[in-house]
Image 1 (cartoon, one colour):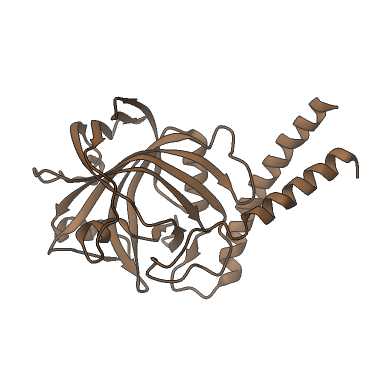
Image 2 (cartoon, rainbow, N blue to C red; image 1 turned 60 degrees about the vertical axis):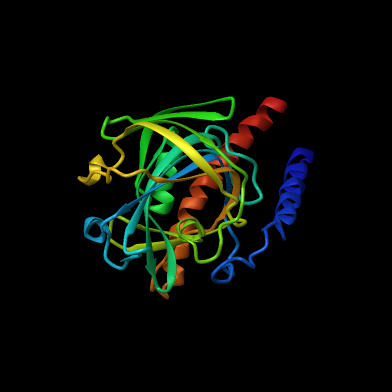
Amino acid sequence: MNVRSAVRRIAGSAAAVAELGSLPSAAHRPWPLPARPWVMAQTWNRLLFAHWPVARETLRPLLPPGLDLQTFGGHAWLGITPFVLTGLRLRAGPAIPGLSNFPEINVRTYVTAGGKPGVYFFSLDADSTLAVSAARVLYSLPYFRARADVGVDAGVVTYTSVRTDGTAQFSALYRPTGEATRASAGSLTAWLTERYCLYAVDGRGILYRTEIHHPPWRLRPASADIRRNTMTMPLDFALPDVTPLLHFADRLHVHVWAPEKVHSTDSIRRHVRWRSAASVAAIGGAVVLARWARRMD
């Protein structure tokens, strides 16, 4: 083993050790942290929650089998959430060049399966071809490529996203209007935001759950001038003509686990699925490091 290889191995081991104990407190979670190690971390910045009450009959037919639509106050709720994702990285690894920072906007509702309430995404649009491809393969999430532009001026976020196939667009100016607070337990705000898993269905119709973890949301009241919003047009329904419920978050650090099959005890199959994808990522990383090493020689 040459000196450069030894240094890389030591640095990798040190990074892995540094990850131990790095998770924030889990006292606020509705169920314990997974026993398995998390696999990915990321940060969500300048995030807007815009929520509309929607008739249950509108959303229920759009859900895959195995998920139960949740309601609050007699309504289902649909959220549209634009933000900027930064610092995307694998466990014990650095941020991934070309994959770590990009704008994203998602369309979501709130569901439960197996006693764990979570988020179901109808769509996620991202300004990163690599992120879209990776998320579709690894997490079976309905990501779409979009062109996005985000700016901030005097605290006002200007956000524009256009799906590359032209089927969905969003354009808005939004800003926080008050101090950040933690939502009260049992409130609609807490019900909408304090969720610690997401659900997705793969091409074979198999339902997966992905656990996530983060500190409690600290949300600020917000105002928004939504100038164009066709994010639900691919779902064939229009949002109600009411003022949405708005919240703003400056930043949230998030840890993500590998997806698991819902209601399945076939742990070998699900881990093989993840390991195969992770191996591809590891090989790609090794190639990059090898090229770097050759330049240093």
